[in-house]
Length: 285
DNA sequence: GCAAGCCTGACC
DNA sequence: GGTCAGGCTTGC
Image (tube, rainbow, N blue to C red; front, side):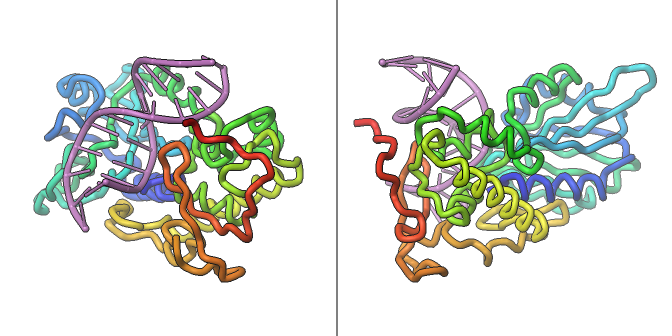
C-alpha cells in the first residue's frame, strides 16, 4: 500500500526518469481514473515539459511548464491503494488496469498509470488548485517539527492510531507505518493523543521519523501490489515488526501479536510491549 | 468477506 | 469543530 516511503520512492523515480521530458501525447483509457473531463486533462497536459516533482504526504505534484507564456500546470497523482506509475517502452504490452498513458518526447517511452483497485486518481490542476489541496494536508510526516507534532496532539481524543492516519493532521502515514511507529514507541493504538505524556509523544515523534527514514532508504514496503517506477519491489517488508503479523511472536518479548479493528482499520500491536492505557477511547455501540 | 486511501455525510 | 461509519473497487 503506497504510504509516504513508497510515494517518495516513486517521486524520486519520476525525477530520475521523467524530469525535463515533454509530454507528447496523453491517452486516458479509463475516465474514472481522472478527476475532471478526460478531454480537459489531455489538452492541459499535452506539449508541456516536466520541470519539478514535488510531494506532500502521499500526494505527488508534477510541475509542468510551457507552451510559452502559459502559466505552470500541475499533474497531481494519488496512488490510492494499488496505484502504480511506471516508465515503459511505448510498444510494451499494456497490462490490465492501465488507465492512463503519457507519451514522452519522441513517443518511444511513456509513463503509465495502472491501478487495479481504482482508488488512485490523476488530476490536472492550476497552481492555486494544487496549493489548496496541499494546504488541506497537515505537515509532511518527514518534515514535521517536534513542536508541530506535539501541538497537533494536544487535547485530541479518539485513538492515536486514527490520529496518526488523519492526513489533515499529519500527512504520509497509512496503516503499515502507523502500526510500526506505535510499536517502536511502545504505545497502544487506542491511547488518546491528549492523554499521552509529553515524553511519550516525543518518543512517538522520533519513532515516526525513524520508521519512515528506514523505509525510504529501503524503497518502501511491497506487501502486495506496490512497485516503483522501474517495476521494482520495496525492501522494507522484512523489517515489519507488527503489521500483518497477528498470531506471530513479538520480536522483543515473544508475546503473540494481536489484531484490533479501530475506526474500521485493522491495527496490529504487541499487548505486552504496548500496554493498554488505563482509560482508552471507547468504541461506539 | 476482507484489505486499503480518501471522500462524503451523519452525528454530537 | 471533532469523530467515525459507509462506500467505492477487485483480487485473493
